[in-house]
Length: 206
Image (cartoon, rainbow, N blue to C red):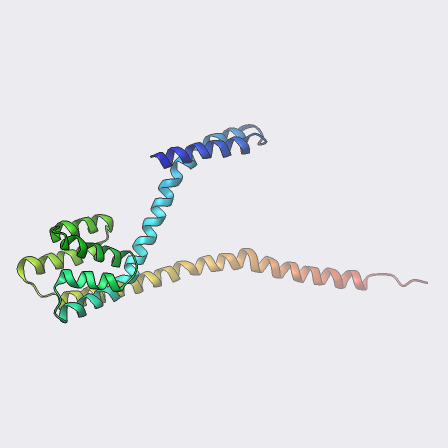
């Protein structure tokens, strides 16, 4: 809230500077829009950071799940495997796993540690992993096949996301070509035609 109030104040100051030379109603509109934009700016920034954090988690998840599965198959407990993978990897998901391992070492219940991680990373993939870990802790359910399936699903989801991003990028590229490249080519052609016309249209002297 302090950041939002500070942003509103900064927006009001900037709006005051911009609205002074603006004519009529435009100045009033700038004066009103500046504080509102400044007040909402921290929310926009936080939402952007959250989207970037989720994107990094989904990018790292398949590889980390494979490392977790290999560590468990090598004989480590799920908590020890989480800590080991978190120590050897980087990124927000690895940081969370490393934190879970440290909290459990200090006596925190695994369910509580995973619950806090799920609160910080509210993604379906993370919730599914935590459910599998809790089933293994409570009932001794095997994890290897579950982790392999989750890693495969995560890779497929990432592949679909990349394909969707590529599909959305196509119309944007076409728009850029239509708005920038085509007019530029037309201007070059027009300049060449004008130069040729002016160069050949003069009258001979004498």
